[in-house]
Image 1 (tube, rainbow, N blue to C red):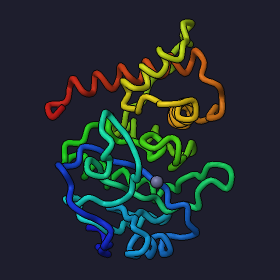
Image 2: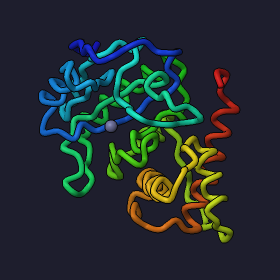
Image 3: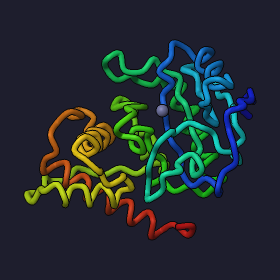
Image 4: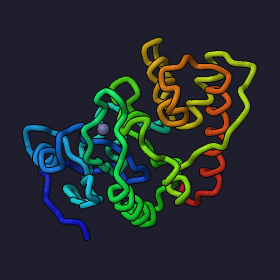
Length: 236
Ligand SMILES: [Zn+2]
């Protein structure tokens, strides 16, 4: 059982959680992050904080709505806090390169995620990055996050290598990304941020690349994986 250090920064959910949002703290150490997430003046919190050493601290009950996602959108919903459990990974953040995550921290995350997803029947398609649900504002946990470990454990969705598509258009790309769960962009800034968020997740070595045939092929493959996950999900 994790240590419970209560944060006052929560309220009532509109329904049970069906998502997990992964964050990094972007702070010097876990003690400072914990103090901030429990400070009533910060107006932010998360359900869990995982130290670089793998120590897990819970700050908000899973039944309650922690304030971690901010203005966000996923899968047609803009109240991501009501739908999700938020996990903060102790990390100094991009400085400016993406951080990596120690083995002890990843082991603790996998154990915790397994328990959360089983407890609430959370599907792999809904285990996402903060940058996925708030592309214009957030870049955490960053392109250095080892999604492959979650994918291998059946806790998140990934895609296999695909050949580039040769029919790239903005509407086809954003329709595919929208089928993945991403918000349809309202303007050019949102569109560019969305491409970066998707690259951060699926092409970590090409975060700043322009959208191209590979971006579209990956978006279609991911959208197909999301559709298959939804079809197999009795709670969809
Ligand atoms: Zn975050």
